[in-house]
Image (cartoon, rainbow, N blue to C red; front, side, top):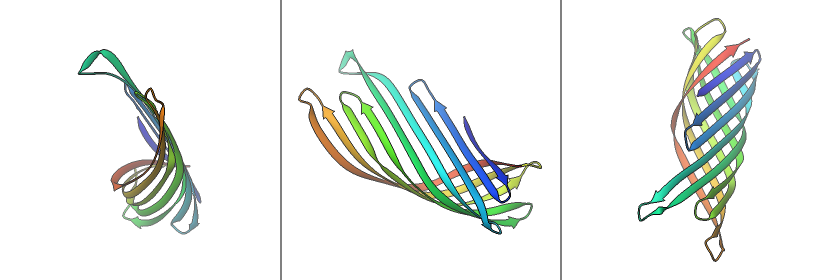
Length: 189
């Protein structure tokens, strides 16, 4: 289930995004709340709060030892806060908009397979988008948007391994970038 919605009361805009994915062995939840204020004609400044959680439970057997059932458990939670700008330009019967944003937050994760690994770290996101707001009814708009994003995660991990209980600490930096498509639904009061 995926839902993006917005409530716009001139000059204030409220947006929320709600995503739930559920399968037999994985549960994902993404909740995003955004609010903004038109600081000038057609220029919206806003703030974001984003909470993501991902829980995984998988049972499997090793082909070399089918008598033993292995179990993998993973829980990850990320909280991000940030700001965005959006500029609207009337084109035809709708509005073309350009957007940019920045988010920063903390993440926590625990992975248990043969041993426990704990992760914590920070995440930074930058995004730039181009979209169009299409009016479909008197109070509703659909907003398709193409967005370029850059994400960096700095992760510090600890693991307690095996019978000797060897403790290991690792610091990792992950950088990703790409293009994604978003489809929003706006509701005007």
